[in-house]
Structures are given as C-alpha cells and as structure tokens.
Length: 273
Ligand code: ADE
Image (cartoon, rainbow, N blue to C red; front, side, top):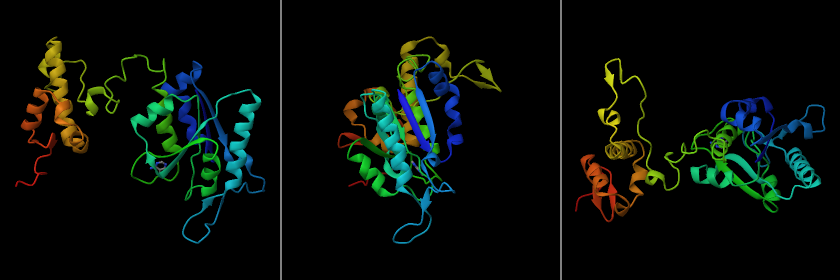
C-alpha cells in the first residue's frame, strides 16, 4: 500500500519510522512518502494561509499549494504507469467519524493520500475540486478539536497499517479487537493478565489458570459485557437480545440491565409504566 502525507510539519510524522508502521515500511509492505506543503509555494515567505473571506478568527489554508501538490502526486503516478487513483483522506473535526469499519475499508485501498491541515482548515474548493475526480473522505478521529490533522494521520495510519496482511506478527491478533466487525458482537475487550500469578498480593483470576477453555471463554465474555455496560452502554443498547445467549442475558440482568422490546436497557434508563 502506498501512503502520501502532505503537511507543513513533516517532522510531526517521524513516528511513522517506528514500531509496527516502521517495520512494515522496512519490509516493503508500506510505501510512505511525507511531503512538505511549502515546496509548492512560490513567494519568499512560503505562505500557505490567508485571512478568511466573510471575516472571523484564525486563518484558512490557501487552495493553490494544495492543488499543485495533489496534481503533482497524481501526474507523477500516472507518468510511472500507476493505474489506480488514490483515496484522499482529509482529517477535519467536521468529518465523518473514523471507525474500525472505515479503517478496514481504507486498508483495502492501494493508495491513500492524507492532507492534514492547520489553522481553521483548507479552502473548501480543494475538497470540491478533487471530490469530482477522486474518492474523498473527510474524517474526524473524535469529538474534540486538535491544533492540526497530523496527529489524526498518525492515528489513522496505525489503525489501517495493522490490518494489512502480514503486518501484525500474529494473524489472530485482531480477531477479538474491540470494534472488529462481527467479533465478540461489538463488545469492548475485557482485562488481560500475564505472569506472575500473584503480584503485590493481587492474584490472577483463578479461572484463567484452570485450563478449562469453556469456562475461560465464558468468563471473558462476562468481563466484556461488564466493561461495555460500564464504559459504552450505547454499544450494548445497540445489540438485539436475539444476538445474546442465555448466559449473556443473565449477566446483563445481574448488572441491573432490563430486557424489553427486544433489547436491553441500562439501569434506571427505562421509565416504568
Ligand atoms: N483536526 C483537528 N481536530 C481533528 C479531529 N478531531 N479529527 C480529525 N482532524 C482534526
């Protein structure tokens, strides 16, 4: 997979040399190219921003450097005989949520181009221009506002890269991921333990030492239900009772959840008739 990042802070992307993504690059599984947007400016100060039309605070990124940068990447690829067009990923707090489902979708693309912005964002015409020729995704990594899109690019690249074939050491490692579509019915993962069996008088739960696979699986599922009920009740409320087995339903009742209308409701959420 090829990844291009166009930014005014190329150094911000240095972590892409490390760890999982760095190793995938060394193995040739990922071709990452980071570009300095200012190389497509032509004035002495390498200006990339200007004041917003209509007034208001902050600055807006000018369209011309982005247009030249993107055209050069697209033309270069065409000249190299590259058949595929990239998917353009535009990080913005006003984008659609970045989810595991989107990470899976992007991991199936041959080429992603990221355009992290600073200031108040990029002149709207850039997205409009490229959306007419490319698959463009405006994406937010969460309901908070960062100073720029570079950290979101690091987040998205890591989420996508670990899904590529051969990038994770153990092919099983993403099977039980929280949010892996279909896995564990969208429950959060429960706690994990390793040696020693006792640490500061805290013992590993006995069931995990029992070697009894059925009991271990049931315990893990109960832990996942309890953690999801506590941290993400919205996820549990989206699961129909029919998707839960009898032991799941008992666990939720034990946690104070109430079954009604084919789904479970958090404690205190349902108004009694
Ligand atoms: N740029 C600033 N905040 C962001 C966010 N939450 N997601 C994506 N890009 C951003």
